[in-house]
Image 1: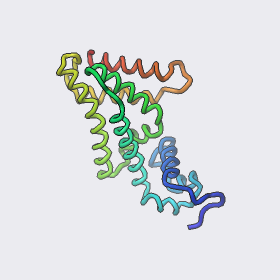
Image 2: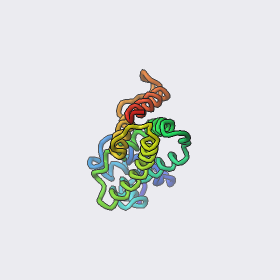
Image 3: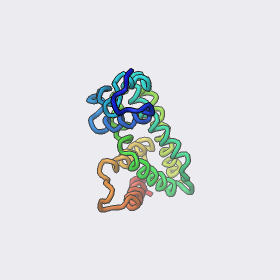
Image 4: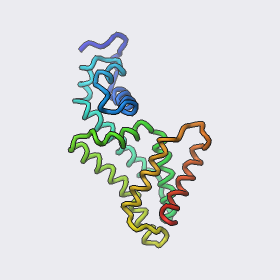
Length: 195
């Protein structure tokens, strides 16, 4: 396979994933071709297949790696104390983590419909693992009598939707600094569960 003029041998999988992620986030998975990804990387389309078998596998890899990194970051995040403190810390973590990765978040949440059933199931397992971490905090709060939540699973879904939504409107240099947004969202999360 010949490389395009100006390309270099160090073009790698991470560069392909970065270009694909940006294109999927901007144009949507269905509208992006492997040729467009190759053009963005600066290689011929055939060279992509050295790194990924197809576009579906590339989408799955982007989602899987995003969720695995999210779970690893959550595991490394201290969420100490009673349930209210843990929920506030979870909310701040979620907002902070997602604001740093708007393209990854968009692809991971908006392109689920484009996964084949096997890949969808694998991504759903990872999503459920993250959701379970929040639900455990809510269950602990209900058991301690500090949260008033009739259905912890439903509350988990509602909180994650609210917290993730920050990526749709927040822009650096806007009216609120990130730290303020994190604090407000943490307060809203606590109020949402009756803390």
